[in-house]
Length: 261
Image (cartoon, rainbow, N blue to C red):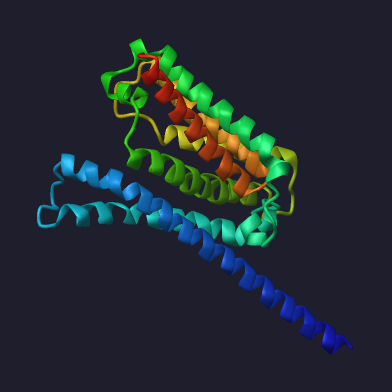
């Protein structure tokens, strides 16, 4: 009997491992799709700029090479979540192979996404006269490639990087590998990852007071809200909320054009 139980346990462990790797490959495929959505934007940027040291390469090659770095970093973040998220009780519907119950998270996704989209978009509208010329483009209707990349690349890869990767490893380290989990560890991970992301987006422009406030509003607010959604629900809820925030932000741009502002 003990031998049968041991064999059954080994089979369950093997099935669980296969299920986890299935989740990994699904998300890796989503990463590739999101990077593909970013490719036209990167290509247009490569056309408009000259890159020293890459004169022998075609523009499409330069654009492709520039995506290798984010692919590597995001895949690393995916692996961190793959091996550690379950240990610290951070969830992913795809990894758990469970059903995504939209109704249970719909209000969270809509409210969280709307708050981020409206606040970040509203800030640029209110403080438009004090923003540098380079930021004025944020209030124009973007092309289809920018719309697609902001929703897919922003929603999928940023959540994998900042939530599944960064936030998960912070919780793992400060909870001693999941042994001392409590709400304060999760709250610390949300705030700490928001600070890291915000600092990582410091502009090359001379930072005025308005730009500093914009930096924390645009990056810090979203990181905190999406981090909280990841903690309370799962990665997929955070992804959907992030995507919806981008849609709200884009709709605000369109409304500005329609009313002539």
